[in-house]
Image (cartoon, rainbow, N blue to C red; front, side, top):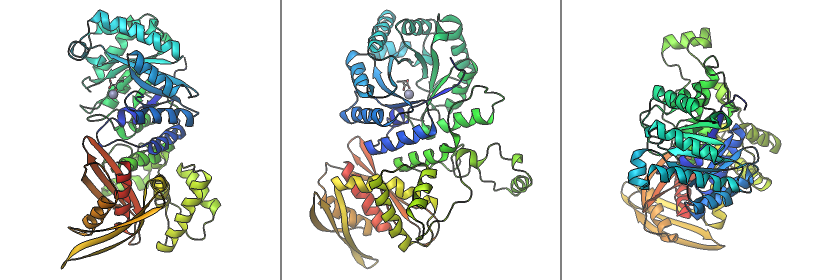
Length: 501
Ligand code: KIV
Ligand code: ZN
């Protein structure tokens, strides 16, 4: 077994499970392609049995991605495992990831199963999965709060039944680095044939220790790390991929086992995920936050100017942050734009590219200089525009507003070739426009939970990106819109969110 650390990305499964992080199929595919470009080893594409949408996205990712193993999660039940298999079986390298809890609390209160029943279920279900798929991973949910003696038996049962990966999750983010090291060491020393499988860890960040716990496991022989881009995930999230990777990259003296990740894809992939979720990185987020490479203090600036190594342990270039962004303009041809998009990590089909190129030209008429950020925004928003063809599409709008008048808006949309128009009043121009959209698009009971607008690049003529969060019962959908006119960006975002509803 090569002494490398495999990166198992679960942004599309554990990450997506977090409130406000749901994504549609096109967004999941976009992220899956970015993960493939970044060279993750495994993409956990979803929990196939959870819903029809989940099944379809796991299946779509399985068909689209060629260079990564594609996993679907399943409980240790036959129908779950069948769904997982049916969703991943078309992947070049499919994997069924099945799990069962092994801690006393989970076994007693959630599963209502005895230890013997749990061991028998692990044996039966791992072997059932193994008869369908050559690659089966078993996770002992809540492993870090399990009795170590029992954990040894559970892992042993899974290996005997044919699991090729054994995952030790810190499901509730409870463990510490020393304890995680001891657990992995204990398994290494006490489970027969442990060296025939890949030992993996999956750490949650409730106490802020997910990355440290994961790396502690590596020092004791874990060779797969489960993580998410930007550390998104349930509660305080999962171990952040970019942090794990950059620790190993920056400290090869401590982590001789390296991973396969192309670190220069970290920044664009992180931006993509934040943008799809409609949130910004915390300004001081390790590795990918806006300030991660900023040197404000005079003494630091002086040091960095003399020699970057004084205060810089990794370079912005190593994570794919380009210092000198190339300026594009109306004379930039097809080829230059295509090449630029490729460098930024986007591969568009012909139809998408032509559409984007038209938008690029239109933007050149409204904005003096077009930066990488503008181009990236157009590429990120292309699904929003194209998916609207089959949904509601903004045709035109007029908004009247002032401090001595009630704001009113006229909005017209097309849907399946038909144009409709509505007028509405509102408490301000945005409210009026959104009220008009509400009259135009039939949708279940919903409310606007959040609305934000931000500029993509600098200058008065900058593009504005609007992000809305619309709540419908338990579900929160994110809508995004892009335009140099912030009212238009807002209406596009709202229509995009309503289309998702
Ligand atoms: O946190 C957890 O225990 C999980 C497992 C299903 C792997 O996500
Ligand atoms: Zn988890």
